[in-house]
Figure 1 (tube, rainbow, N blue to C red):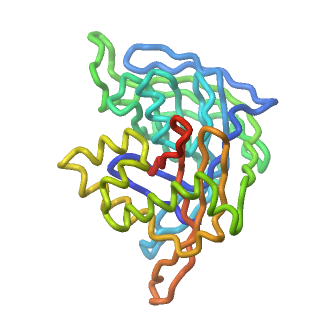
Figure 2: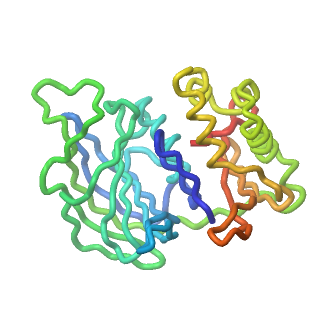
Figure 3: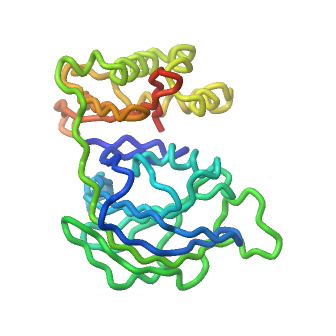
Length: 295
């Protein structure tokens, strides 16, 4: 499955789960951001698809483990845009840790309202992980920062604070199961989420800003209303979501207030031959209307 990424704003990845909490999980830990302490009492883990560059400098799909340690459960661990909004509103504080398939720490993301966008990526080179265990069914580890990690996007560093991130965590949790589609095949295209996704793709392909503003969530509307950012946003959306020629084979995941649509499109391979790819569009329900959350 293909990942669409929009680096200026956030990273969007395609494999995710929506189970908010796992039975049998244990977690303890604290996080200090800009002098403020947060207790981390929730843990969720998923297998996810990610991308790296091979020896020929071409993107290669890899499987990674992602673990969210937070003070509140999340519906979708891969929806960084939604997580950052919740963090900016003070509704989520925590750490998203990414590990390679063999358990090596790769990178992290911190969520906190003291950050300008609610989130900031961090390197894990200064984190000491011990007692790690990675199986197909579960993941466990203990970790703590060996030295404070600099944060560069704080809104207002507290006087006397180091303006840094420190944390200590211990967790043991099963992986969340992959969700099943609520509709697929020809009937999926007639569902509310799929109709919203199709209108979004049509408006994006046509560069119909008025139509795009009607179908996307309010935070994206604000981006489109910014004259300096509008063309950049439209260009990135067009590159990330090509027209879906095979929406009759779409799969819809409708969880009531949020979900996503998977559809197929073609791109040209390095050899000039068409390649079928699967793309994913996230949606949220706002006042009984489905809105696209594309970032």
